[in-house]
Figure 1: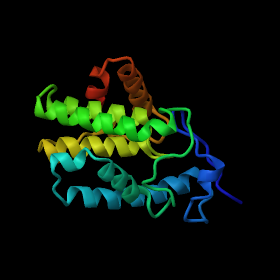
Figure 2: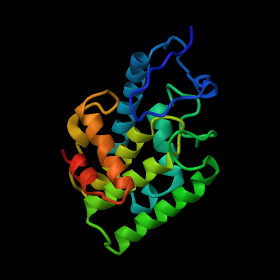
Figure 3: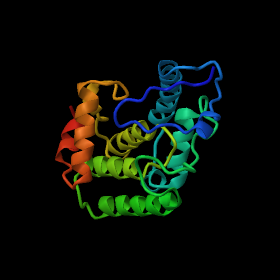
Figure 4: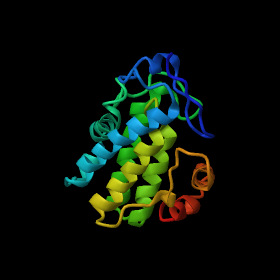
Length: 198
């Protein structure tokens, strides 16, 4: 039968070739896919919150890819691999490693020079990495978990609530999140900062 996906506003469609990377062939709907992905994400979160991170370890391609792999490895064969196609969001696929290195260098500078308060560093990193759109799928969830790693593991503050709702479903939390991201795209980070703690 194959995988039939209905997308919510702002979600990145998965190409037919990427769908072939689905490891659980019995999944046929978005609801089933979300359920299996969530189980995998919860395993990744246990790994994240059971260990310590060094600042220079967090801001590396290695950790960023490893986190995505841990979040989706039981569902997608391409988990942790940079996307090989261009999408409706994100930069050109060939620019991903360069832009990611630039973001990681910027984040280290922000911390070392105390350019922004901790919450703003985490949210700015979250926004920039989701704009890069490193992976074929799961970029929003991955970027929010990266934000949580930064705020909790590097600054010893409470993880973000990110609107306290399921952002993969239609509704106010997703609408508010997308509005905040669009404002950040235009240089106004305030809404995204507020949303992260709402």
